[in-house]
Length: 206
Image 1 (tube, rainbow, N blue to C red):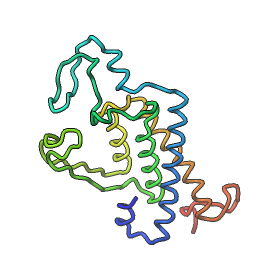
Image 2 (tube, helix red, strand yellow; image 1 turned 120 degrees about the vertical axis):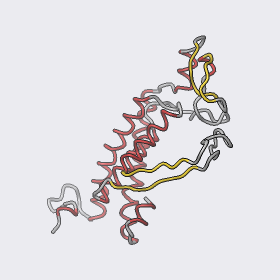
Image 3 (cartoon, rainbow, N blue to C red; image 1 turned 30 degrees about the horizontal axis):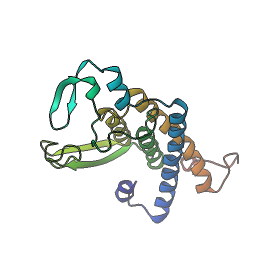
Image 4 (cartoon, rainbow, N blue to C red; image 1 turned 180 degrees about the vertical axis):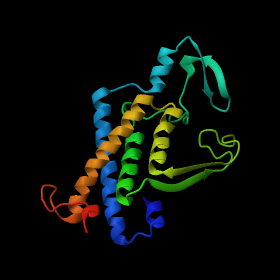
């Protein structure tokens, strides 16, 4: 949101409207995600994989060792050993829901999916494997809000924190929540009820 504000030379009024819609959508996405987490109470990979692959040889990441072959009971996610996984249910992915909701609001507010931001990680800057990863400078860039949200979601699968379904459903949930939050935000921005015949999006105004 801050990047978009700078990029598009927002006024205070622009920011008030954008961040009002954005923060409420992300907040509502969190409510939806945690409702699902409590309803399904599903196990995370940190529990499931060691249980299901105990006594079997698997190939996976080991801290500071790269890809190794070892007993599945020893598998851990790509996180700090002092904080191996969030202490709440897996399905759905909160990160995926938050990111998708935020991306959807920015698309709706700017009337475009164009993003254009990037972030660079210096060599050896990893919090998980400091001094080793990445081996060389890495730059991540996103042409669209959708790309950024999708990469945020899939990062939870890369890290062994979520399964695929939790990510994909999390993204879909976030988008659906954002669509509803956007419509509600417009009623406050315009000062009119959704049921008012005179209510319309700014694109419909002359």
